[in-house]
Image 1: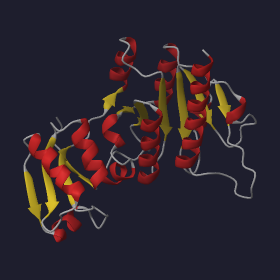
Image 2 (image 1 turned 135 degrees about the horizontal axis):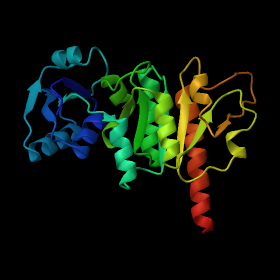
Image 3 (image 1 turned 180 degrees about the vertical axis):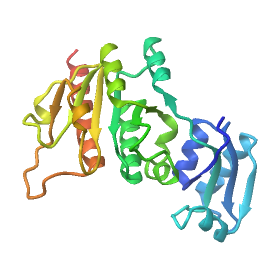
Image 4 (image 1 turned 120 degrees about the vertical axis):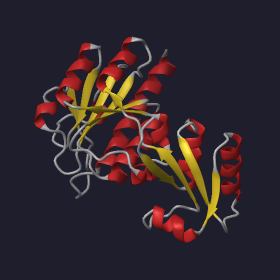
Length: 253
């Protein structure tokens, strides 16, 4: 368990944390005037797990959440635990790795990162790889934007993204990159079962050194005057197209 203490705020993120793993929750703070049904459910769940529950002032919650909307509840938890690349590869080799993996090359906006984690968990992805540098860490804003999906995912910090891509390819993963300049759209490609989806940063996209590792690169068609979507929206469109193809393929079998 990490020696760092972090906070999770908001009803859904705290509920998901308790649902995923309560063992590293240190304390639940509830607004002393809060009597919403959802807060009572959180209190009962925390007590069931033997956790300390404290009623505190809204002012204290506001201060801890740095002015963000906390909905009357904050969980104090041990710092987020990342996986190493070696741990991910070990899980893959023992059959515990998922068939598709999301790789984020330099996403630095916490809300985009959180939204991508939420979408990844929704489509059934279990592993997300981010670079050790040039990426936002999992923090309270990310957790809130992810609506607690963070706690159902393995998030891997890779020291060298090119090495991570190469190691995944050695283990049978195809790398699919999303790039606005690609001639082929996401709808014109068939995606293999074992797939790593690579998304780039908000401004510059996928770095060229990593783009060269892709087995295929596709784009999202843009028919209006706007040139691109933000990475969270683009990633959601791409992931759900892959999911659609997988479900269609399953129905055909």
